[in-house]
Image (cartoon, rainbow, N blue to C red; front, side, top):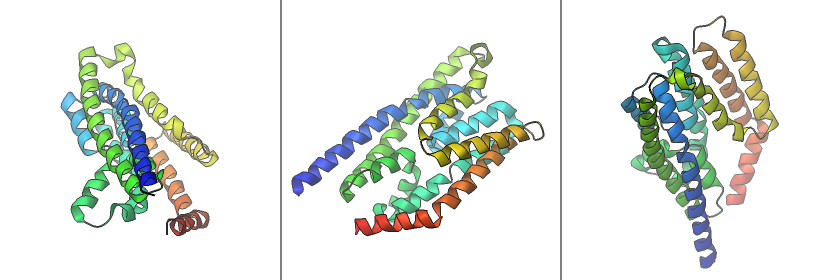
Length: 242
């Protein structure tokens, strides 16, 4: 039993390291695109330090790049809506993290898609904790380093329009989203949100169509999370853990 536990912990470390390396690479794109959207190098770095959730960050600079300073409220709102999913992750991981205000505060900052996925993929509690903390902290360090590198690169390039970077934020966000579209419902929600955004673009100020589309996706996601079937699956998982 002891040998099995050690083996599970080694697997958790290996999986965490692989995810850290793969995910941190996205930071280069974010840094360059953040500068192309109008932020300076230090603003891009601070955004990664404080926000630290890839999808929301790409959404923020995408809206900001499309609407400029006038779109800042919509950019903040759309990125916040996309970050709501982390609250669901937090509820799922609450029992694993355990008590302690400082521990929970730190865990909240490192609760992202990747740290949650690696943690929940493990079978032993200690391996889950290793997977969560190693993935979350590792990506945080790597993401911020590559954000700085990408921002410096983007700053050296000069005018983003000369390289097509002014429209690249949406492409980068789509690339980040594409691997997650594995279920039929996710595809349907994505298509519906895109249709809503496209339909509202002529009528609303820049950033607002994305905000409304994100709201549609979040509402559907929360309805699915609290649906009878989802609740039943969560209860079954809890019974298996006990």
